Length: 238
Image (cartoon, rainbow, N blue to C red; front, side, top):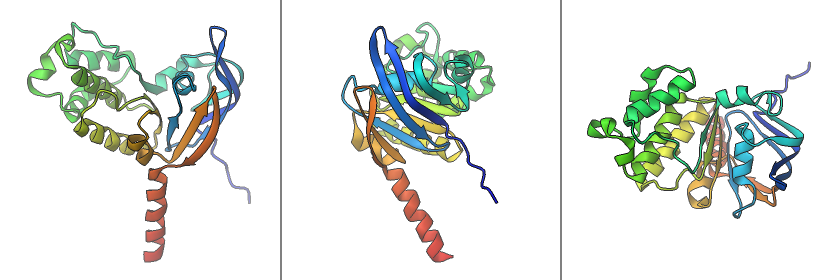
């Protein structure tokens, strides 16, 4: 009796993507399963951000295979963008709007329920007067929390996080780890790049090293080790 094999959430095979004439991705081979957390490490220019942008349908793949959530990135980039959430370096907030208005704008653009804005903002500590303060008057850390609230409210199938710990205080970094674990446990796939492995590796099932636009190494992350130990403990009890 044959066993049905579930295709990966992320599939790249010999994928090449150009930034101008420069190969930002120079033949990437990668598979990431649904519900996994994968961390990308590497020096500046290694291809981490480019790989996330390709997964978001924002960086065209010029050759090879690239399939995200069952969609070909070349044939159907708009469908991919609808189902993924990208947290990049730029905030992409409207300074004249307050946090509630900004997150509701994100939800309307994604055709999601705007009622999800308030719980997400509350989870990120954007409460009281902060909710009605123009974003342009918030601190960099508060602005970053508003962006994360927008991602949380959307609840995408694929979370793409580019240096997500940057600009966050210790408590918000800890909360971000909880949100990533909750998203993955609910079936979402999470990809994040980081220059802070001490923060990112414990969150990951897989730690993938990039250099020169290629995957050059992989190790097991802290999340997978914890899950393996938990499964063994349950088996021993049984």
